Amino acid sequence: MGLSEAALRADCDALAALEPAFAAALARVGYPPTRIRERGYATLLRTIVGQQVSVHAAASVWRKLEALGDPTDPVLVAGHSDEALRACGFSRQKASYARSLAEEVTSGRLDLANLPEDDEEAIAQLVRVKGIGRWSAEIYLLFAEGRPDVWPAGDLAVQIELGRMLGHEARPSEKLTRELAEKWRPHRGALAILAWHHYGAKGDAEMAPV
Image (cartoon, rainbow, N blue to C red):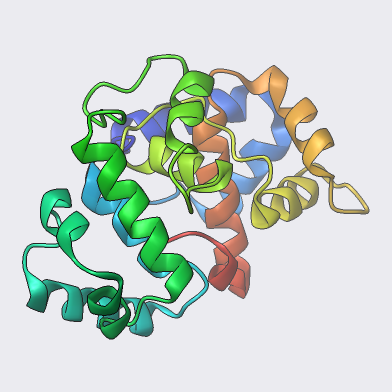
């Protein structure tokens, strides 16, 4: 599971001790809430379902998928035809993504219970699934596995809010966002969660992952 409340607070305190700007951010908005997702196949399938659609639309697709059987069982999902998945609201592309995920899991090529301990190696395994890019893989490792040093530097809200907290005039690029955060290892996961919390507190929550 994701970072516990105690672990998240401890990492935020460590960040505040390292960087006065983060201490000021914590004083403004308080500690961020935990972001915990269930570990395993269902969370990744929900990630695919929710891509580029509203929360309401994603929930509707999931309910229709449940009507076909247990959507948390990759064997059942792998057995659904493209027509059945599209009837649930999947686009042709998303149907191929769902099938790719189910096949990776059922074949044993992707063992979500035993991903490599090295974050980059784990990301490399996850992105073999069609429809799971680096950002989705990083969010999964942070929210579902609670890996404390995952740093989604490509996330727009993280870039914007890191720049704001540090007083940059312009949003840092992904490259600069990654470079800046090197000195905050091994607490970068908590920093991402703090950035989303700080961003959401300013009324921009729609850009932070939920």
